[in-house]
Length: 111
Image 1: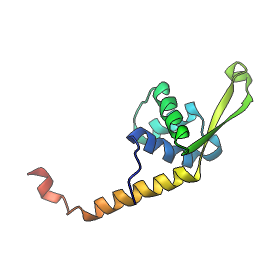
Image 2: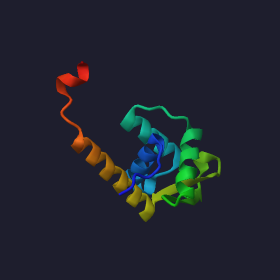
Image 3: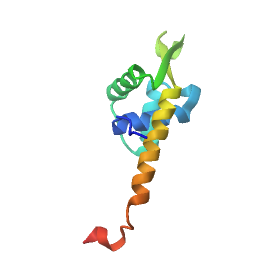
């Protein structure tokens, strides 16, 4: 299995989109990303990564209904596509193999 070309942010966003399910929209994704990783990523970077993932067919976006708390603007929701799930599985398989082939680090990592 070949490793998909994903940045760290794209990989994490795919996982978070999958985790949030129907509640996966920009601001919520950014909040969840920060809560789970400790990374405070600019919302513009989140949307840029989401656009790249959508162009590759890993996720699909759809616009929800306008809401009064957003001044009448609608949220764009994202869902994981089969290609995105396949990319996540391929990424994990490669990383699992690499971790499995890695000798115990123990004291050698400090020398």
